[in-house]
Image 1 (spheres, rainbow, N blue to C red):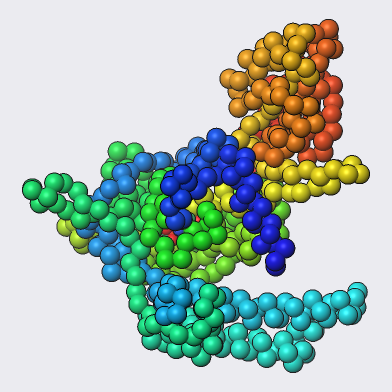
Image 2 (image 1 turned 45 degrees about the vertical axis):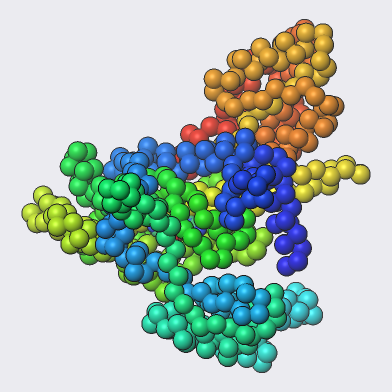
Length: 514
Ligand code: GAP
């Protein structure tokens, strides 16, 4: 575990050193849980967004996109339930004065029981070797059964307290489980209170009277309030979807783990409108489609899993997360929610406008049901970086850090390097760049030895390094080195476009989704 934490620290440092992610306002000592994307980060982020957008909007003829404003009428958040129910239960330790999410403290305690069981299993597996039968061991080990029973009882008590919104019970669980503050080490806890996560600001001058408005905590509401606009102007027939990518804001109490939990972040959300009664069929459909989208990137199928929700949000009748194996455990990257007709019905009620669909096949009007797929761009970015970060021993005495990014997502597709800075090689390299730059993000690099230049490109995940040498001037060939295998091949410069395209174009990836 400590080793994994070290890896995570290295990834965070790597992101800064190689221009992927910087702390926001760094020269003023930063701003909690807010980050800026650097020159390589923004390319990776844009590629992730393109992968999502095109997979939704280009590959599905019944899904269209919109871009709604961040500022919206404040009644929207009353109707959606966010003013009253978008809360986290917080608790303070009186000695350290540190603030925690009560639910997170309890979930960490549940994870401790899971760890204890995993340790028993690992110990026994080592002892029994090949003859080890995990299922049998779990069914017979007294220690494992004790841990499992305590875990299950705690889990059931916690789920009930959360569902009942019972803050006193949450505090009592923390006391009964003897959970201590990691800073002060004491059990001196305050009561548990609800804390609303929405940021607010004022719109209009105070002389004219101003209005309190919220920074949207999800992009989804911008889709719901535009349902009729899109359905009518696009002549959309149910089932159909509306997709959107945009910023969202949450005043997170416990903001940590780098860009995993931020106060300003970006979401990619798609609301799929269906007939009432058909929502669970579509929920299963989108669960599969979205997992397939993740797996197609080739980061290892074993690194993904579903996690069904125990506590459903106020608007949902089914929900699951797609989790990715981060260095700090399996964590949610995407949520798939069956949101019923809650949002559209609420907006109908609060706005006084009829929000219904006339279904010509059924010859009836209804408020459509909604399946939502919601993924954080930043979390997706983090999962990709964690999966790609590799430290490798090469040769006898050398190591390299290489980002084994899916080639389509890599910020730079190829680096063009003249072997030396003279003899007309830089000019030749520039000529090659000019022939490639309309199709790919390519980089010119002439500084330091070729070996050092390779390492620099490995560190940002560039799939190809192309070296221009004296032979290039004679016969028009170059050496092309592949990032993962480090193999080099001599090819005609005129072939480069095809070679790079074969590995980095979105087309092959999209075909895997069909
Ligand atoms: N519209 C539904 C919705 O917003 P959510 O589960 O609260 O659902 C969806 O958020 C996704 O947004 C999450 O799976 C995660 O990827 C991302 N996300 C949520 N809060 C975040 C935060 N504070 N920082 C970064 N990403 C976040």
